[in-house]
Image (cartoon, rainbow over all chains, first blue to last red; front, side, top):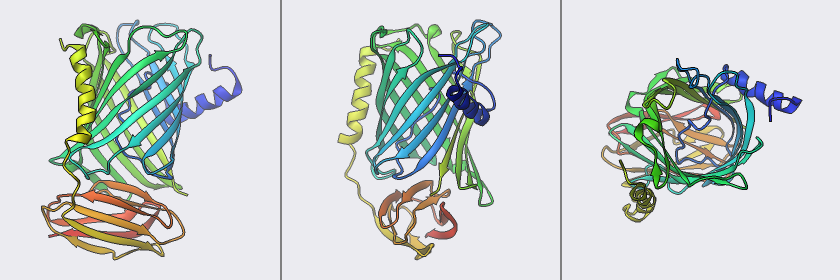
Length: 260
Length: 113
């Protein structure tokens, strides 16, 4: 479905306005096992891949998301995803609507490890694309002033266009919380990094050179009392670790939590 | 090259072991803070270094609040009439500010000695 009718254009502009640039691969987001009951937030995640090779240049994806903490342990999000594949002459499509759900099992710092679980169902909007489900544990361990989170996910195609085996996806995030900088009462910034990996299907991992592995420095911050809410943001660049992916992928995530 | 079957097993094992092998939660100290009339009561609390601290926050107001601290990295919405529990520490000696993100003038401090 190309960005044609007025509703799609409105959503496209919403995501574009927040993100500034059209971007790719909306999965560059690390989930942490934190649910806030009754919290309502709107979110935008985006990225774009840049490479001197035209065949790898220009991938973009961005999302518009609406999040709500239903209970003390369950948060749900509705995600609208727009994507552009790399290459010359590609178009950006409204590609998928996804129901994302995060479950928090332990309070942060209560046990040796903070634990949660993620599960999503994505309904494809492009003809010939499969629906999908992605799920897996979300784990965090804080020590020495560092907050370390790992997502270990399985992604499986569903429906008549489903193909292949389940895929393994992983992501790692470290925040150097002991280096958090505060600027008055309104701004905080914390340095860190993220790494994302897609080695391939279970039982058939691709050779390293063909895997989608990217990582790089990120900043994590908050702007308190920005209008009727707080803006939580993070962003940086991901360096391609293999020849199969763009040399550099800037990415960002903006979550505006509305106080009511 | 990592065997994908081993990796899949490790993935499941990591998830299960995080629940099964963790020691039973225990806090060494407990602190209770009440939110009332957009104030923390008490607004100044103390704890000791080397201790895990259980903080109970009770919202006795009529509007939602969000207990948050950039110093000990915790945030939790506390809906009106409800309470939440947070675990922090062990913390080094010092003074750590906390605030209500929904009502930013509502602030307090945790002093760790």
